[in-house]
Length: 316
Image (tube, rainbow, N blue to C red; front, side, top):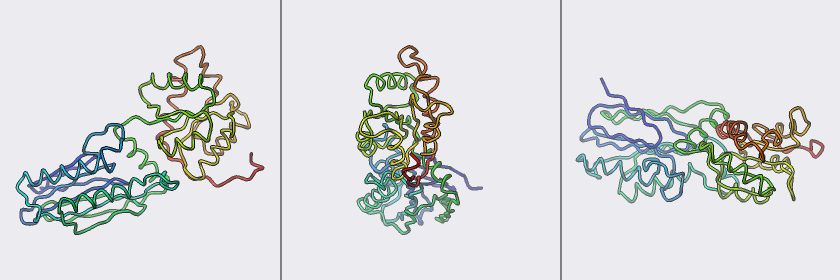
């Protein structure tokens, strides 16, 4: 009976004995290598293209440049010759609208590009490419026969987005961008969030114009957003960003109290949750942020949000 191995992101397996290696891919890439003469083979599963592009200090196997080099190194050390190996590439799907739609890096495409380049650099012949698209894939690689079976994952758009967010957060803390015009409030929010040790602050902005630039630069997992701000109010900003770059958002404001028209409007605009800033008692209760806000930010960071259509002016 064949051995079965399931790969999580960042893992790889090379086998000399009959084995079925499987994995589940969204924007991640799997390189499958097979030596038909020896009936040996292996597979990896990486999340990000290159280890010098950040990602929270993930394990080397989660980066394409490391994962591909390491898998080939193991195969050659086992006794394979590069000329006898054949490679196949899978994954790199755009399973959820990402920041690439407004100018940032498309992770799926970059993962494909690094795989193609590194396979050329290592003189590995690629005999099959099932990459890109908008659908996830589940792979089953039979090392003994060299057969790879690919099952497309028939998920709703919402489920695809949720799966991608879980994949995106593998191995690191969710990253928060704080948007509030008060430097004191930003400091108190930062201190409370950081004390929880369950979230990372990736940046701060004092108005939506700064926030827009930081969203593009930092690609946060969740926004902590005030409403009353100069130049553009938080509700307007939320409506705009949900049209072009949907991002999970928790509104923290004194004017979005339970039952208020403003709370209804921000929820309709796409906020995942709302916190009454007065209930946080920021100046007196140092633990209120951890109790009340942090759990909502964590839940939001793992929530898939969808593009919202522009609302009419009367909706404001």
